[in-house]
Length: 196
Image (cartoon, rainbow, N blue to C red; front, side, top):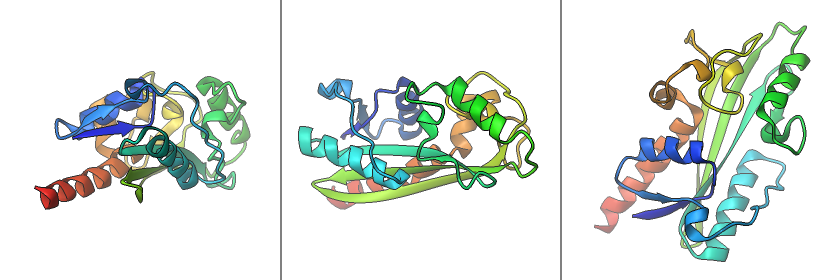
């Protein structure tokens, strides 16, 4: 079964294809000839995911899912949240984003945070959403160099390694995206059974 994942982020695509296995063939935006910047103008993570999936479905006619992820820190009133990718500016620079976050938390003891992913799946104009959350805390300094985004400063609860110190396989077992994808996959598999 072919499904469009509304991203051109190679990291995300590989991460997801690994989780999905061979049941589905994932197509990227490039694969379907979509080169424009898909708007993300909603005030919420779930709104952005919905906007992206409907954009692809309406414009290109493919069943599609899109995700949006935010890092929410308790002490900063859930910042950066929906602005996670462009926290330090429109250039979407991960290093600058992490620096800004660490600076804001400099003298704060409460470092509780969570990563939240919302996936919006659109098939035949119908939408379903799936959410994945992983709780943890923000470290005092960056650790590790794999992963992307805020991975070097996020320490999941119950672990001694940040996301960036884990292998992709380790991260995939517990990540917010993995949890949301698991729900998506369960749903797609039950649907497939229903249709066969």
